[in-house]
Length: 335
Picture 1 (cartoon, one colour):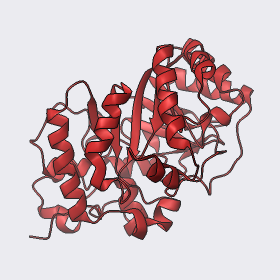
Picture 2 (tube, one colour):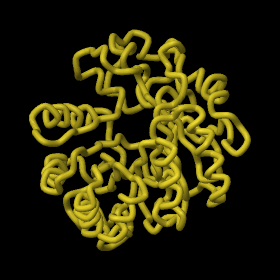
Picture 3 (cartoon, one colour):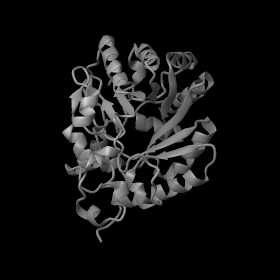
């Protein structure tokens, strides 16, 4: 990865605006994070820094962002500064009134986490009874309010045999997009890896099926974020960057202002209370390493390395301790 391919600022900032949550998800990456939150005044300072750096979009997450009492005020200021404003939510707190308020506050997109078309399976995974029903209701209220909606599904043992059901659920819910997220091994995701994660061969079979659905299903975008799928598709020159987008197109902000390459890489490279975003983006040694990875192991002889760049940096770092190693999810064997 050559640095001249990296934009002059992150296109998207994912901001864990709070770590407080009303759920108890089996794979949560942020349960061990600090609950410290920036004051509304400091949030304003950070937003001004993002605007100065010409960030395009701000996506709020957590935790559950709706548990931050001043979220609507923060969103309104973000929209007024010209950001495209979005949010990831579990949907439990979104009723008709909240959906309308989110629209007024400037939210253009809201993603709702639903991990199974089966209510009992989803509720168990998320740790809250009735959460599936609430999530589907949230999608309906958001659509009614004129907000673009999507579904986020973490692919793992609980839903690997019901991918078609997830797509059918998305179609019946009227969302524009379903995001199939590869399982990360951070926080509880690492603690529960042996229970929830798939084998490399299962990942291969899942992506083969998901690519088929992506080609055949109409009126629904199916998003696949994992670089290792480059082994299954034709080479493309229309992507902005190769490999993981974290640290190349996006950055993560923690609730206390710490900057990390992504929410699943716990390496602090600055803090927006004190640091300039453009300086961090340009000069961070961690980001430089992520943008200039060196092939190791089976990646050295792989024909797809120029597109994959070793797969998911966060997962590789968590499981091997070296971001240059091959992604443990990769099903390719040494040749």
